[in-house]
Length: 242
Length: 242
Image (cartoon, rainbow over all chains, first blue to last red):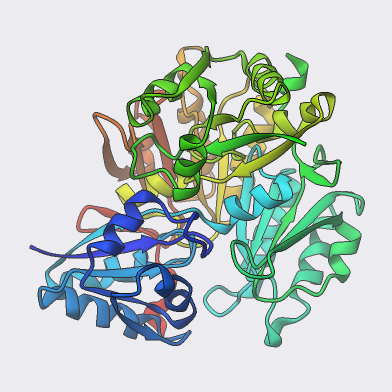
């Protein structure tokens, strides 16, 4: 049976790729992905054929990849971070039956882990990952998820904290968390992880509410035991009590 | 300044390592870790010096790694999955100041992502990661986190679902989720990810409540829109509405 590989490429650096993803990409006849992600990895695989499609054309991109795989080309579809988490594995699996193509998924390092590594160790224990993009999920549901996570004293990782159309979503999310957690809760942001201009900073929840995030930012909200240690954001696991 | 690297090694296969982790391990004078994880990667780095310590000796292990790093040895401390998520990055950062050692963290693929890739795409959208181990977190708090995630219709990934001392924790967690979600909710388990005997299966929430998980199992509970497609567990992202 013909096969399509869906691979997470991590944050964008060569070092952030898994060995399995490198092997799949080196063995590929064709690499399909969103333009920005294709441009990120092209320098590492200069001899490969790429097909890139712009943002918001996800179903079209999945069909292009499946059609080429069905025609017998060794095709790898790439996703930023992990292949599953806010990635293309799900729509590909939904469409695959139409093409009689087997799907193999290669996981990758998602921004919750790569951003955390920059900041210190903000998500050592239980945490919730929530996207503030309301393109596919109603804002009401997103707000309920934020509130429930804060009620349960969970660390929260926020993907897609902002865009032109929803500049105030992060502020709103912080205000919801502040109903249950102190404004002094230790928070952090990681920007351009694994790419040019990579940076991070640690701040309080009150400061985060005023922070202007962009679409290249991943946001970390600590739980009640998260602290700042030498400029790092650290959520203890509890080993100190050993 | 002397440096200690804390690296996530993924699930245990060579393909699951990131290129950055491979480089760090190849450059190391000494690799420190929990016995099981050291044994997993020894075959890939046969010429390296390893120091392994048994489970539950985490602080001792961190101090061994920091002492060797402080003495000028290029030391890498390894963690299963990611370096931060239920990993050693946090205790190392808490202790590092005592040793005047700089800490570099290399993220890895956590079981939420590698287990998901086996099952299909269970955590496409917002999800909560919760450990059922009550060694470091009171069971009451764990139960509240499970309940809050279920109330918010989030997918839930459960780490450490079982051990000899807490054989009924997974059943209890499922019963809490069933207060808010249908017993027919699509769930899945992944076992021995990236290792010998790797397997996964998809089942309902009611079936999961009766499932005997062991410590090598990662559990996935779907949200209200998760479905089974050709034996795969798939949480749609919503692109079908495009």
